[in-house]
Structures are given as structure tokens and as C-alpha cells.
Length: 412
Length: 104
Image 1 (tube, rainbow over the protein chains, first blue to last red):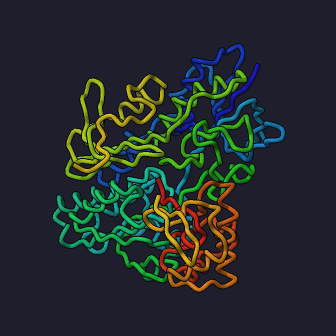
Image 2: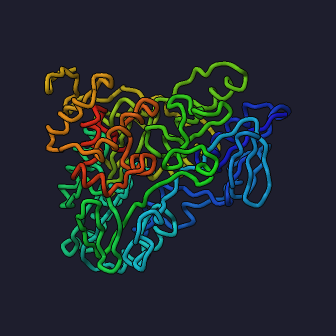
Image 3: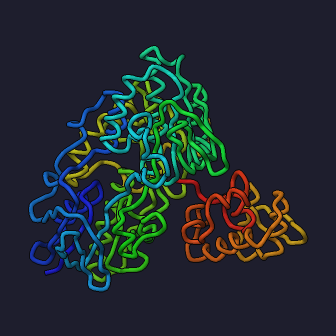
């Protein structure tokens, strides 16, 4: 009897458990999923919480409800992975030996890493929306906001769901207009990047959308600390950005146990092969989803497409064969733009988001890099698909590899 | 791929002038590239550039500011002083490495 241990019961870990339980004979392989709690968050839903569109019960389920029979679910915090002994040690002293290990412990916002962020203004005039508690606190703050400087800020890349800060800005702008407050609010978007987004075509397009909405963009801003007394962001090159309401995306880091186990890079991400997700240092450890260091977006869609490739590869790997599947870094994201519209972007390691059409079975093609109501409805519908199709490991009719069909390499 | 000549060295560069061939670089060229963007190299500058050069082959990509500070041991504040405004890009330019990928 061999053992697969999966660290993390989020999007990647849950999908892997479901798919592999159907593929690995129970007499040969046991599967164990470890997480620190039994609460599965639909993280894309956080975006809608500050505006009162979603509530907690729409974005939270129990983890165990999505794991199939024949998978052991262990609730406990991982202390470290002992890669010499092939054993996972939990903080409460329990040990879990493994033959194969999947690290799927994601990435987490770390406000503690920026001096001043957790000071006197945290959750008073400084908020995050990448945690449910933060998004809920921000909802209250927005409801009481009657004008001033609203600053949306990204600490450092990579962050999970890299388009979410833009989406938040678009939604906030529309929300302020709807509530008759737009004239009394100065909107500022602060980024360490040199433009609105990471890839040139999308950056120009999304940057134009910020401009149309009269959002001031401050680029190349690397925050050194926050001064809660004066309510300013201070950069390493001594620029200052004052705020009345700060919505920040803190530094994202992989799990601390990854660092304690000697398995991480400087942000606790596990170095893996970009195409197989196999650890560069151990041939019985994989990292899937946000926990790895692959140069792809940290996003549920990437985890989903990666899992599709990973499962077949894993079966080859444990059979002693070479892995033939190759993940291409495919990401597919709806970008909310306010007023019940959204854009769709589809890209991978080599191809940046491009305009055009995204072919979709049954529903029909969706517009890429263009604001439409259909894209917005697609984003809303995805919550149902996530809980009912994706997590249980049922087939989703989207190709795992990115396709150039419908894409226009140059603007029309 | 365009080529250009800087202080007698013919080098391959991308559209933005970042070198594309790791082995075409040496320290005299690094100093010349630094001069192009108004930077006079000191020992401290070289410490950063040598870290980037030594880190690149194993990592396959240009070190981020965080990596230069946590692994290379040079505080971010100092990098901003030595390579003002856009230290990550300026260091990559001087070190003859690809522009650091922002994020993805």
C-alpha cells in the first residue's frame, strides 16, 4: 500500500484528490488531504463582498464535503516536511509518511511584512480584500465613506489573481458613481509595475480603462512602509501617497512550512519544472496551484488547467514512465469592469492576453479583452460551476492548453 | 534580433536595449552600459551586478529586487539609491540580463 499526501484542500488539492481517487486503485494507494481547517473559500467571490453583492454564505463551504469517499481528511497545521524520511510532521506531533507528496498550500497575503500596515489604522482606514474578514470590514468602511482619497495599492508581485486589484478599482468607481459620491472621491491606483498590468497589450487596454474612469495611476511604486499617523504610503525612493481610505494587496507568500522544510524560494514558493510541476530537488514531491514558483498567474483557472495535465503525468510518474504532459501556463480570467460588464482574458507562458473571440461550446464565443455583459454573467455563473463541477473533478468543457483560435495577434 | 555596438562590443539586444546573450557580457561592457544610463559603478554597484550574474544561470531568470535583498544581502533601500527610480530594470540592463518579468 502506497500513500499520496496532499498538503492543502483548496482548489488544486481538492481537484487532485477527486481526480486521482478515481484513477488510483484503492487497494494500492491511500490518499490523505491535510488542511488547517475545514473551511473552503471561493476566493474569487471576495471581490463582490465589499460592495454588498456577496455575503459570507455564498463564498464558504466545508472542505470535507468536496472530498470523495476513500480520501482521508486530516485537520492540522503542517510543521514541516521531512524530505529525508518522507514524512510530514504536523504541529500537534502527528506524523504522516508519504510515498508521493503534493504541496498545494497556496499563497497568503502577509500584511505583517510591510512595516506600519498592521498599525493603528489597520481595518480602520486600511483594508485588504483578499481575506473574507478584510472584505467584510471593507464593506462596512465603504458604506460609511463620504469622500476623500481612495487609494488601491499593490505591494509587490506576484499576487494571486493579478487582475483583482484592477477589478476592485473598476467596481469601486462604478459603485461611487451609483451612490452619487464619485465627484467627492479622488481615485488612485498604486502599482510596483510600470503599467496597469503585466502584459503589454492588456496593460495598455486596462490602463486606458483606468484613464477613462479618471483614476490616477502611480507606477513603479515599491512601498517601504506605511505611516498610519500621517496616513501615507512611503516608497523606497521616498515618494509619499496620502490616503483617506487605503485598499491594499499585501505581499503574498507561500506557506511558512515550505520555508521551514527547505523547499521554498525567497517567497516560500516551491521551485518546480514549469511543465510537469515536479520539484526541482525531489522526485516524489510536486507543487500545484499557487504554491509553486511557475511564471504563471496565481489563479484558480491556472490551478484547474494545471491539474488536468498533472493527473495523467502523475500516473505515468508513479509507473516509472517519463511524463508526457506539458503544462503551458494557461490562464483564463474574467475581469469585472463595473456596470455589470466584464472582460475576458486568456493567455499562457508564451502568449499574452490578446483581443478576439474565445470559442466556448454551447454558450457560444465570448469577447476577449472587451467589456461585455455576457462576460459579466460568465463570471457570476462561474461560482456555481466552481462548487458543482470544478471542485468535484467533473469534466469542464474548456481545453487545458491555450488555443490561438479566435485570437487576434494584432489589434484590429 | 537587433545588434548594437557599445564601446567596441557588438552585442545582441531586444527592442528596449536589454542584452539577450548571456555570454556576450563582461565587466567592461557592464561599466559601459551603466554609463549609458548615467550610473558610475562603485564596489557596491558591482556587488549587486555580480549577484545578478551569478544567480541567473541556475534560476533561468533575472533576480527580483526581493531576491537581491534576501538572497544577495543588499537592502532594497540601497538598491534604489544606487540604481534610482527603476532599480530592477537598471540592474538587469547593466548586468546584460533580460528585463525582469513583472508579474504574470
